[in-house]
Amino acid sequence: MHFQYYLIFLASFGLCVLLCGAEFPYLKQSVKADGSLSFLVVGDWGRKGLYNQSDVAFQMGEIGEKLDIDYVISTGDNFYDDGLKGVNDPAFVDSFTNIYTAPSLQKKWYNVLGNHDYRGDVEAQLSPLLREKDERWFCLRSYVLDAEIVEFFFIDTTPFVNDYFTHPKDHTYDWKGVLPRDKYLKDLLKDLDLALSRSTAKWKMVIGHHTIKSAGHHGIIKELAEQLTPILQEHNVDFYINGHDHCLERIGSIDSNLEFLTSGGGSKAWRGDVKWWNPEELKFYYDGQGFVSVALNQLEAEFVYYDVFGNVLHKFKVSKDSYLASQ
Ligand SMILES: *[C@@H]1O[C@H](CO)[C@@H](O)[C@H](O)[C@H]1NC(C)=O
Image: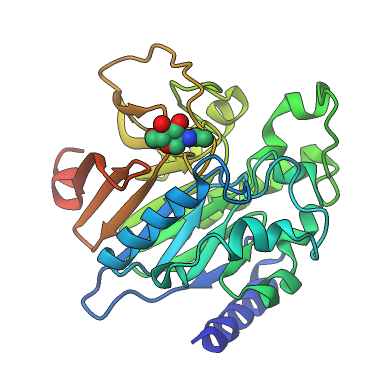
């Protein structure tokens, strides 16, 4: 199965390179026999099991089993504090392989990079050598995962944030492959726009590390709100899913169906700083550890938020038909 997946990846990647130049790589995943699929979303996790990372991992295993998940999506900040030092950094095994050990989590992990990952060797996380160490691992800067009923658009959000360039404090960011920054961002936005406009999937979900709308510590990231939100709205994206704020949250939009979901509770949390947010939009906020599960088919998607004990904190269902009817 892994081999097959890899062949499809190579074939579609090759085809894409041929047909469309430097666009996002495309991957494919099939749905279950009944046309549904399920997955977990976790973010901000790699701390060698500390700060309850292992407890969250254990509950992910339990829920993963119950839902028979197809894969896991990680919203970035995969390795604290400073990413990976290289492909042989033991943090990879200590924070990933040896933590997410439950049988149900032995599936593909689709990762994006967070700002902490950019403080280390970015290319290590993108390297096929890492995939050899643990075949679950998959990370690129930006890519598309086509899972028949849903398309996921994984976006590299760190290079959008001005502060990392102008006020890096005592951090060093690995901008290899990102400079010149203007061109990198322009191409990324153009490729996202193109990929979204080509998508015929029922559901569209965009995954990035940074918050666009959040009542948590980092709040609104202006660069993304200005440059990404219009593209998401134009193409009727259903969900933007991020980490960065170490909390679980759900924020809707007064003027569209676009929802902003934060799953950044993979380890250290409890920052305690919650900002005011319009209650008409803020549907759920939990300033602690946990993760999110998603189960969907053509017609319905169900999201469930869990705490570190596996308790359900919040859940909601979105139906495509009522969705369309209400537009
Ligand atoms: C672990 O989780 C429990 C329950 O939510 C919480 O009280 C505790 O502070 C957490 N510990 C750490 C180190 O985050």
